[in-house]
Structure formats: structure tokens, C-alpha cells
Length: 275
Image 1 (cartoon, helix red, strand yellow):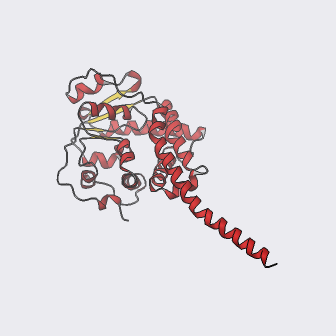
Image 2 (cartoon, one colour):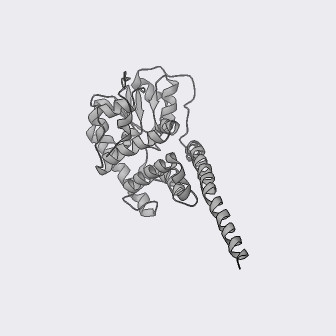
Image 3 (cartoon, one colour):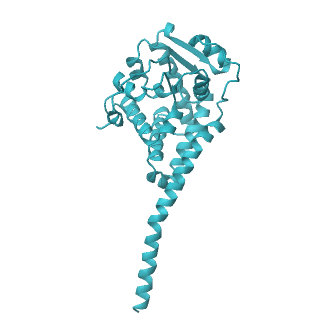
């Protein structure tokens, strides 16, 4: 099985990882990503995947397929060094490949943000779930095939959704399974990571500069925390990519359908004239 990561050249320099964030999406990770940039770090987050495009999504898909479904070779330190060479913080990616991450970085400093499981499940449904549903609804169910980024994102969203809902998708039972599997993930992180290497922050108890700056050994900046972690914020980020895929699919299908219609009219006209 060929992997997109294997096409990347070996890096000449790899930034040491100052923090690895094991949090699930929808647990304040985008705000943390922006905050770490304010503090002078260079974090890798799903936002970087969106910036990079199809190749980054494919790398993520290959990694999660190996981790979750044992399809292909799991990533090790060599693969992660290729992927994250220019970054000193990793956010969200470990959620999709926890065991591979912990094996590759056994001595790292880790952070876990968590929230009420039922609220997390609801947030997942309102963001990732809605986006995945859009990819499987008309016209995106057709248009996504004309945009490699959209098709890869649809695959990722569908895979993660089915995995964490145990196949129940976005039904009430699926939302219940989301919450239960989220609790299992949190417990697994706390079981596997030594307490001295892990800081745990609960969103309901407050999460901001006072929680991360002392842990990282940096001064607290005199600026507001940069994100509210709302569903609206998620769709503002993902929306332009969805719109781009829509327009690309519309143009592509029109370029295919228009000649077919023209040939059809020509054939009908010819047939009518021959009568």
C-alpha cells in the first residue's frame, strides 16, 4: 500500500517538539492553536491541513487508517519527522493516531483538554457531523469527486464519524456512542501517559493563558485569548473550502453535461429531419 508520507523527502532539520496536545477536536484546540502562535510557537493543527491541501489530508487519512483499522503500516518517528519537521507543537493529529504518537515521542510534554462528554458529542454533531453530512448530500455527493481535497476530507470525516459512533452515524444512538467513546479515549490517554508528563485541563473549569503559560514556562501576554470554540467559528474556517469544492464541481459537471445535451439536441434534430 503506497502512502503519501513516503513521497515526502527526509528533512534536513527537525524542530524539537515542545508540546504535544492529545486533545480531541472540539475541545478548545483551535483557540489553543492561535494562542500558541501568539506565544511564538509554531503549532501544527487541522488548520494547517486546510492550508496545505489534498496531500496533507491524504497523509492524515493514511495515518488514521493504519491506527484505527490496521490498514497499512502505522506511522513512526521517521514519518512524523517528515510530517511535522517545521513545527514545534502538534495539536489534534495525535487524536487520530494516539498509540503511534506516544510510541514516537515517549519523553514529550503532553497536554490534554477535555470537556463534558455529552457536550463534546453535541459539538461534534454540529460541526464535523454537519460537514460530513454535506459531503454526502446532493450536490456535494457528486461535486466532491471533482475536487481531491473535498473527496479526501469527506473520506476522513466519514471514517472518524463511523468509528466513534460505532456505525450509528448521527442518530440519537450514534450521539450516545460518541460520548461513550470520547470517555474511553480520555481514560486511555490518562492510563498511557505518565502523570508527570501530562497536564489535563477541563474546559468547564476555564482554559486560557493562566493554564498553559506556566506549564510552558512562558510569560502571560496582555492580550485576550483568541478563540471561543464555537460551531460558527468552525464553519467559517471550513466553509470556504466547501464553497470552492462546490464551484469546482459545478463547473466540471457543466463542462461534461453541456456537450452531452448539445449532442442530444443535434441527434434529435437530425432524426426529425430524416423523417
